[in-house]
Length: 249
Length: 313
Image (cartoon, rainbow over all chains, first blue to last red; front, side, top):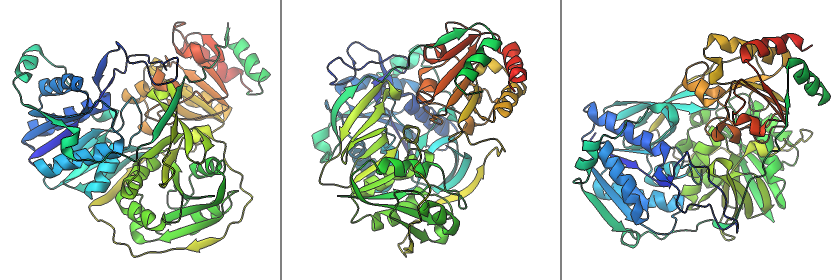
C-alpha cells in the first residue's frame, strides 16, 4: 500500500486528574498538560511499523483542532510520520464532521489505510472511525489488538466482549486501535529537530467546505457522585463479619 | 410520542443480557412503541427470548445468511432501511453496540449519543466523559432521529413476563462483502458471566503470575462469583482480554465487587463505580482503590485470600 493516514487528537494528558468547572460549563483545561490521545499514539506507532516493514511508503498525521494542535502533530512527525495536516478550528468539532473532514482528505490524497484510536479520552465518544467507514463505504475493524497486512487485504484481531475476533478486510479500510496493539516508541531529541523541517500543512475548516452538525448540544457538566470512603477492617475475620452484615456472604 | 428501535445483541443462539437493559433505558422515554430487531441467520430462539422482555411492543426478525456474524457494515444498511418511522435507534454500549451504532448514525447523518447513563427526556440524556470524571447532559436535535448507545451498568434489566408478537422483515438490501468474519476465540468458562453476575472477584498486578490467579478462581468459586481482572493483569498475560474490567474493558455493576491486588487506576474505577459494595484487599494502604472501597483490608493477598476462601461457608 502507499499511504496511511493517522488521526492525532489533542487532548488533556491521561495522567491529569480532570475536574468539572464550578459553573458546570465544561472541564477545567486551563494550564493542564495536553498530549496526543493515547489511543491515537498507538495508531501512529502501528502505521510506522507497517511502513518500516516496507508495506507502506508514507505516513500522514492529521489533526482537527486549534493552532496549538501543531505541538501534537510535531510530536507525531518526531515519532516518524512523513508529513502532517492541521485542519484548524478553535471550536470543538463533532465526530460526524471529523469523519467528513477525513473523507475529504482521503479523496484528495488517496489513502489506503486509516488508523485511528478507538476513542478519544476526553469525550469518550468512540464514533469517528466507524462513521468514517460508513460514509466512505469501506471496511471498519474496531478495537484492534493485532494487524497483519497482506497486500490488498488485512487480517485484524479485535478485542470484543466475548474474546478475540478475527476479521479479514479489503483495503482501503479504517482500523480503530486498542491498547494492546503495541507500545509506542519514545521520541529522541535528534528526531524532534528533524521533525521541525517536515511539512505541516494548515487548512482552515472553512476551506474543507464541511457543513458541521447537527451536533449534540452540551447543556451542562456535573461532577460525578463520589463514593464515600468506607471502613478499614483489621483482618479476614472482620472482613467476613462485615460481608455477612451486608448479607453478601 | 417516541417510537424506539432497539438492535439486539446475540451470539446466534442466545440473547445477550444487555438487551433487557437497553429496553429498561428506552422505557424511561415517553414511548409509544419499543421494537427489538434481531438480525441473524436464524433468529428463532433469540427472537423468542426478546419477545419475553417487558415493555417490548414487537420483535422484528431479519434473517439472512450474511447476518450470521455481527459485521457493522453488513448490518447497518439493513437497520437504516428499517429505521424510517422511528424517533430513536438504541443499542448497548458493549463492543457490539460501540462498533455498530456509530456506523448507523453516520448513514443516517447524525451524531450519536454515546453511553446513556440516564434519560432526562426524549432528547436529553446524561453521559460520562473523561472516563467518568465528568457527567455531561446533552440534547439531541429535536428534528432528527436519535441514535444512541446505552451504558448497561446504569440500568436494571427489564422484566421477562411479556409475550410480544414476532414479525419477520427479511430484506434483499445489497450488503458489502469487503469484511469477512474469520474466527472468534474465547476462553469459555463455566463461571458466571462477568457482565451480569451479582458477585465479581477481580485480580490485578499484585497476583504476579498466571498461576497465582488460581487464588482468585478459588475465592470466586466459593462465592459463586464471576472473575475479572485489571488492565495490568491482562497486559501481563495472566488472564485473557475479555476479563478486563474498566474503561476499556467491561463496565459492571455487581452487588459485590472484590478487588484483589488492584491499585485502582481511574480507568479501573470507572468500570466499577456502580457496584453495590466494593471490597479491596491490597498490601499498599495508599492504593487509590481504598478511596472508593466500602470495606478495605490492608494485607498480603497471598495469605488473606486463601484465609478468606477457607473462612467463607
